[in-house]
Image: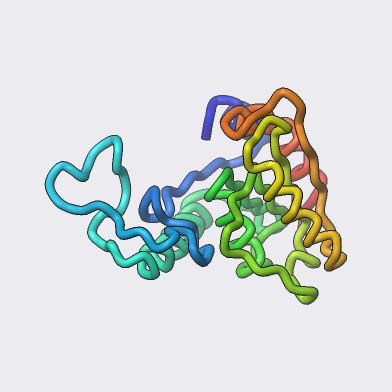
Length: 195
């Protein structure tokens, strides 16, 4: 939710909502998102450096609560704002990008488009019957991102399964700068798709 994202959302008339996904270690439901780690608990674990959920430490429960948090926030936004159900989009970066791919596929009937920025899609298994055949998909990564090989592998899998998607590598971008640097392209992509 960096400045460029907010500016592009406002310029394009979007309602922009961000969710924590229960915990920084949550994966928005994507399998293996916590990679087996227990989350820190105890005194001093609240505050700026550890926002969000801290009570639950079981990795499987954190993954479950992370997905539930994201979907609950979506439902709150749909009730509170005048949301056009034919124009609901999903976007995430890094682990959130992997989460966007997971949620995008699992709840494919909701989204008019999904954008994954340098996705850390560690637990995603693609199959030929992927629901992404029904949802426009945009994947972007910076040419200077250390995760570029895994993102290329991900898109090669999509291509081999004939799952339509748009893929871009942006020069001069790395894992962090792709967030702001890709926003014009992400919103261009969203504006091209409605349900």
